[in-house]
Image 1 (cartoon, helix red, strand yellow):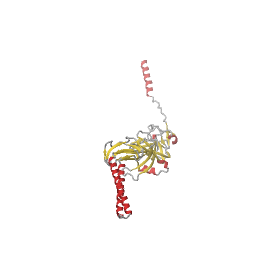
Image 2 (tube, rainbow, N blue to C red; image 1 turned 180 degrees about the vertical axis):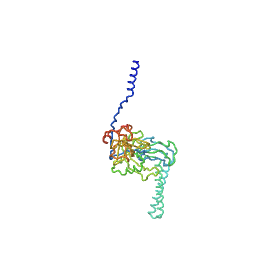
Image 3 (tube, helix red, strand yellow; image 1 turned 30 degrees about the horizontal axis):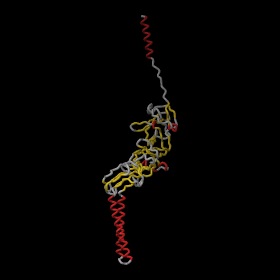
Image 4 (cartoon, rainbow, N blue to C red; image 1 turned 90 degrees about the vertical axis):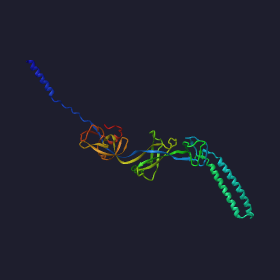
Length: 359
């Protein structure tokens, strides 16, 4: 009986212990960082797909019909102005030149004889005029023959680089046949299309030095020489809303070649831009939001609109003012209407410590 009472007491103690409510341990909320948007003049970099063209890029074509007798250069070779490139067989044109020279000699003798007779009043002045006309015609034929013979030699009209040959030695070429192309790569033109709004931003700039642009080559390296926007075409393309720009780049090392592609990086000024760190935003269904901290330390979800983005920064075009406090970290740890503890950081200090993902 005594053993029964002992067991009953032990069960009571265990029951009391298990039924006693546990004390709740309340974890203190972390201190989160908050900052303001900053309003300032800044610049943004815009990239545009560019087409690289030589400042002079021409086709070299045959000016006379005949067999290509000799090629004096090679593909890809740099040539100087006036250098002989191709020779079309000249024998026919040399024979024509000799014939024309003989006609000039004959007409000259006739004219001199007639002139002596005219000076002695033996023949009429009209006969002298006729012989003079024959001599002039023979001289004109001689000049034409010299031009035809000269056209059998194709020379470089300027310093440049020879492209692929379209013909080979021994080919029969007709007048106008394409032989090759020649590129002057001392400077390069890069064409790129700019949307209307960005064109207006560019034209409203006040400083000429902002016309400078950079070129990112196909290997993602920056071309070492800056270019300058020198030409804007007259009309916008109604289908795309773009207008073509042309920038000129020096090319002293001949690194750029005709037909290359790249990205033109142009700096565009933005006045009184409202900037916030990208990490202070989050996205829901393709819309951007921030958490704004109210006076009673409550966070409120707020939609914003953004303009061009910079490295680690957004330019806010709607939804925020420079006086709003926005949550900088812990965006995944809070929800709308939560109360938080926070520490304020000046925006200038925040901007110097970017490249940090939102938490």
